[in-house]
Length: 260
Image: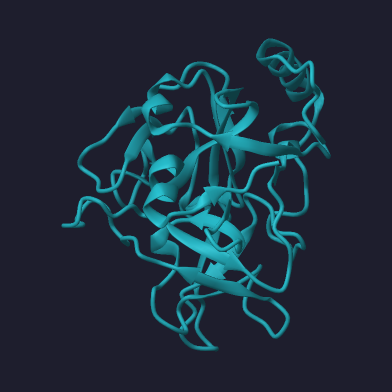
């Protein structure tokens, strides 16, 4: 679904709110094999041996590398920088589910990371299927509705967002239309922000999932704020959810958002 030329934040927000009242959750998609891959779907990585399970996480921010390869910004702790652990499968390991590989210069644990520049972020370069930048807002209550990501939230604007949402394959879409209580947390490397879990409910398999806002930055619409990377306290039960800034992580990798 494209963004109408006469789009306004108030009209858009009102339409979404009306839809949220009546619609139910979408029942399929986030844990299925999909082509193209879209934000929130499950993938498996860190697969070292055929008989052992890997790590299951969620697709995050659609991106394009400097040389034009398409994929997603995902959490670094979901992947591994060394072969074969960097192979990515979607939705799980099998002869037809190989879905690319990761570029991982990040950290598995930004709390203990000595290099404070490193984000808990990696790039999943998708192969064998397409990449969609359409965010499945049907999981937020608009059954069947998808809208393209139009940009990212500047790092300097992370604490001034008027609403916040996330999509991951475990808890699907959660968020709030109220101004979130999002704060920078300098205990973590990269550029990490904490949000009370009651405002952005998440679970471990949601790691890497897209965090976004409906608002106006360079363009009005769905703007990516970041990805889920964990919670406080570590090991749970979580009281706060941690969000890695997409703006910071994409600059770290020299990539750009794949916008529509």
